[in-house]
Image (cartoon, rainbow over all chains, first blue to last red):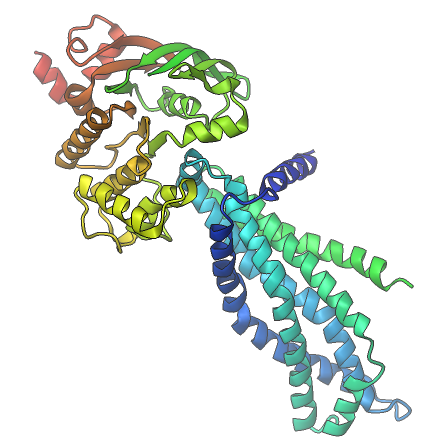
Length: 247
Length: 248
């Protein structure tokens, strides 16, 4: 029952969120600020995780391909496929759900418990729209860029570890990552990224927006935002994969 | 003038405000007093429309809030100024940006016009030169004064103050009380103040409404509150050693 209560309330909040902003200039300023806060400030963690993730994937591929019948370029090919199809869009989105989601929920939740949202309402501002829509717009814009960067860095990480440890030659790895290329794989990954960006920001925004009480409740809202965002990312990952990759 | 007619508010079926009727007059500081948990803040939030009321009416100069469309309610709110208990300043914005915010959202003024208005409001509350400070760099009294500057930036017809003196020392309390009273007279606003500070009641209580367990228990002003024979009111008014001493 609680799930349906929250689902209904979530859609009611989203109804307010997706209304025409009161002032487009302010909305634009807010969105640019959010691109900085939610996106650019995540560059560091995304870069580090991507490089190491790509490296680990390459090592695992190399150790699992021990048959002489399988060409070595398969390591590059498999690394690229794993990174593009799953690791970058899903794992990095899960990381962002933790970093960005908790930030959004605690920021909006604190504004709620310190009556800043009430103050905005008194000024005639559509608070859900003012607070949540710029974050959604910013994430939908910046996350695909972050994920694309993650793909590049992960493949670079794989190439670097593969060649440095002589698991694969640079030529084989590069040949592998160029083999059997389908541009649709990138489209699929970017579609997932956009959906996950929406889920992270809207769910976290919702939990922050409905916060009641004090500091402890802000903490609870923040935790719920991360947990629910992560669950829905996993769920939608399955749904989208089924829809987009099922020929 | 604001008229509250037979206002009832329930939370989860429990009546928090019971059939309250009161009139708050223009150009006066109208005080709502009562113990913590008596329903003062809920009443104020019902009046300004932050809580939907279950029964009754709130009428702003012959305009019934409940009968208005959402757009009309939004426009009416532009005539409101609100001072929240903790100030509710936007902590990511400077003092200047806080005071400018209502002007940015609700007017088409140029930046220079807005800045001029901001400086005027800050001067009015004796906060000249604090434009670039963040709320975290302000004292309790300065936060309240910035919140007052923000509340009056749009030249409101109605000013609402929720416990404006909570957490302040007696001297700063007097400064804030005096400021609210001066602004009320100056702009001929209808001001409603929630408080449990008896000093404020005696200083600026042009009209006083005493709320007890969600009901309007007594109405009067600062000239007759000390001589009332209402038992619950007297319990509240003479609750401190100081006021009991003054009475004897």
